[in-house]
Image (cartoon, rainbow, N blue to C red; front, side, top):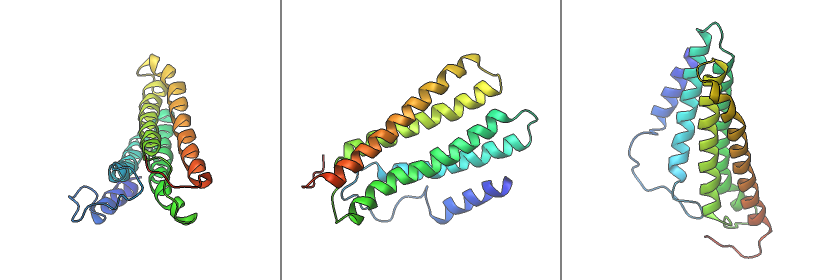
Length: 167
């Protein structure tokens, strides 16, 4: 797990994720927040690695392991898919323009919110730190599923629309 932390830091440094961009991001057809969510996905990978290290050194770590897996799968991987997918999939389907950049932002924001809620509530609930955190778990699931639904709707409308729009 410590290797995962080191690899995440090295990858982030090599990609210069926290450095100021030399050129502006290519945002044609996507929401202007696109670079922020790409950076956030790497932060989620780092959080997943740190949680994994914490779990490795804790005797009762069920919630911490779950939070680590969720930060990696939803925080890192799904955020990357939601950000990169909405940029490249329309181009792969006949150079279409994404149906709505606002839906893109909504899906990414809800995914991030849901993941933050889930990761924090798993640690707090399963580690028996905050009993009310158990009630946050279903809210996080609904928030994330709403994000997935918005992502799917945006891509379905992109693929089925006859004329490109960019609202």
